[in-house]
Length: 260
Image (cartoon, rainbow, N blue to C red):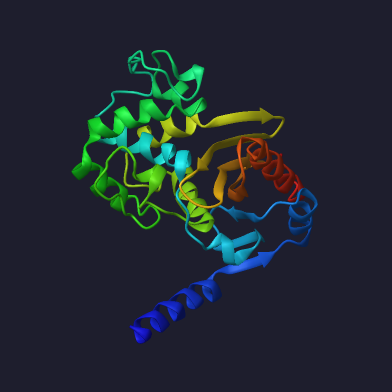
């Protein structure tokens, strides 16, 4: 057993050494000023370079929570479990975590308001076998979905690192996933958050509550002057009051790299 553990540690150490990483003292200072424990990763699409804060954490896997909705949408469309991002899922009439979820809606709106119940309904349509196959084909994190098709991205066993998030998103923006370009374009379209002169910002938040502490995510990409940069942030959170820090600190980090 000791030999197995040592072998795994050597593999992990090799992964840490293999990545072309550059620490950003400015981003580290931003995290310190905010009093936040976490990581931020920036990846220039098309390169094999990463930069940011806290490389060790950037390579550590956590539950993706609602950031999985990007992959989930791809899988739903690719399997035909949903015909388009605007096909309406009927509201079941039951109280939800957020009032904004208590109505009929398609995936376009469900992604924006992070409607868990809609995506759980989609997961049940996809089914365990097809979901397992598609998650594996996308090479998403550890690829493990367990036996509950409507819980695995919320409570585990699915887990992904910040670096893996940036790799997945880099493939998405380049039509590099094993899904038709038309489907990838639909997912990119509904992921747009903001835009300004010469730039566009895409992304998705997540809040993983199955660990201790909770983990807050913000992942996405920026298009600026013909270049694209994928990014991923995750931070320790200690309740809903910490959730705004995900985007606040993420945007602050992007600005330090002269993006946005």
